[in-house]
Image (cartoon, rainbow, N blue to C red):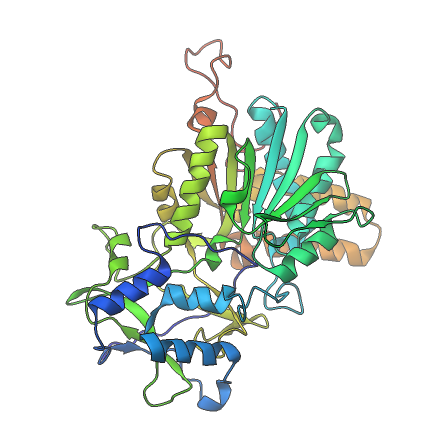
Length: 459
């Protein structure tokens, strides 16, 4: 019997669902698997933990999942994640505010204003490096409470003299009704009523406190295609993953099934033969356990096509690795690790982002930079200088302590400093430079360095 324990760490904010990368969607994959694999789910299975039955409350989501599995058979881990997190009626993200001290996790923007300010500087730096276009869109995927967007907008206001001739608009992609309401409270001018249209691709419109138009969408594909800067902070780690285990018989996908000995408990099982999602595994894969995220591939392809067509850049910050890790699927509840199969719908679920997969899915339509550690990125962006400025302006000991604690959380290698990575997508011509940018001693174009991935240098 094969037994591999699941782990459990933290995760992200409200997100959106998209079509799966290959010709088969997440739901179609499990349906196809059932068509190919009759009821042969026996023998090898994974243990989800040793929690006693009394610690496994029967939640509405658990009832929904057990009914679904009894009706159609075991489901993929990807379908399990999608149901638990974004089910329209019972999904974890749909109607909850899971951020902050009272939630299940805290993100970098909630820790320190410096984080968002430096990201705002990054976008302005890239805008300047590409010739200061007359307009740009800032598009954030899964904006949480709007804290990060608010910090970026504050930088835009503070550098209004630099951006005075630029037409800026904000576009937020969010599936959570609860979080979109919180974002509106955080970002918009309460004196100007919001326009709401539930059935429209743009389900809400308003004006920010600094007078910039802002719109909400549930799907990236509905955002207008124009010169844009895309931001995905702790976004990709929430997207559903398919999990595979290498066996003597070849790759076998991990599914979620009902424990035959305990009717209200779930367990992991291995498919008895190959499933369609196996097509996502690289032929030269050397790991014995892999996680693949088709939805991430779809989104990266969409971003790459947009950036190649209209310009701009995408900045991605997340937990992750460069194709080296194996089992990273985990849960988080009340700032503590949580068994992913216990009390579904009450805990956040996540899996580390495979940046090598994102790079591969860009299909060379655009250039990529990273991943690099958050500690390195923020240091290159000038976090030490910004911290000193804020400390010099702060007279309150409590404020100074908060700034120092936030800095430590963001930069300490044992905290977020080396756990988070930054990754960017840019047009190829951005790294090759423009024809009029030449060095006196060189015949090749001399591009501006990309801030964060090298030291910030204002042009």
